[in-house]
Image 1 (cartoon, one colour):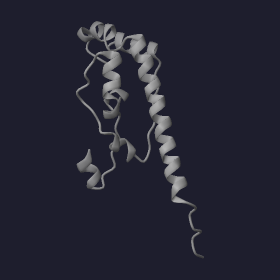
Image 2 (cartoon, rainbow, N blue to C red):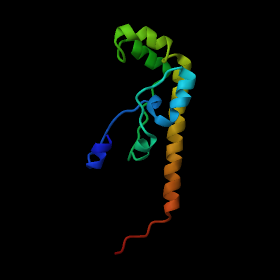
Image 3 (cartoon, rainbow, N blue to C red):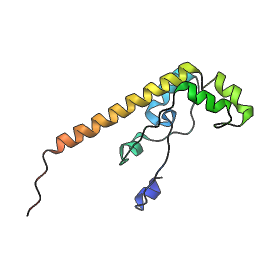
Image 4 (cartoon, rainbow, N blue to C red):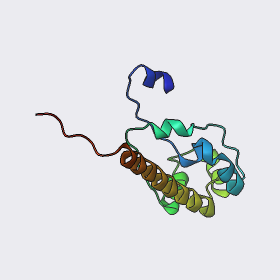
Length: 121
């Protein structure tokens, strides 16, 4: 992704909250899962736009059961481990918190940049 961005290529991607580097310890702490694939926070900080696609815990569990996330042989293990109701609720909370922090940082950056000069006529 970094190479694409350096070349001026726009990147559109999806990222699950458990893959954000700074949340690794927190997520491992309550899920017991060591997430191997992680995205450095600065990548998200450089994004022009972030869209949160929120799905309720129940809907995600139904998608799992319907085979829309993992192959059928992985579903039961997923539902009884990482995708338990408590874990999913906490992951949603973290996603909302991260978005709020990101918006606050952007607002502070805009405010610290000061008022923009009006363009010359």
